[in-house]
Image (cartoon, rainbow, N blue to C red; front, side, top):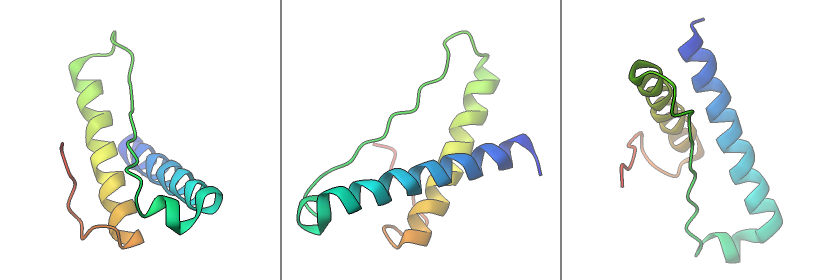
Length: 79
């Protein structure tokens, strides 16, 4: 297991936990009409390579999280 695999799995679990908590606390009526944005920041002093690695891990984790939850079919929106 690589560092990217661990980061991907962690971010995926974090996303799933956050979404699950929001749905439990707010219910379907609220969540079905609420746009949820997540922001991940990294230290500015990190190298571009490190920043790109985290972004790639995030992209992979969202792809896994969203496709396994049925929200999307493996695609990642980029804005």
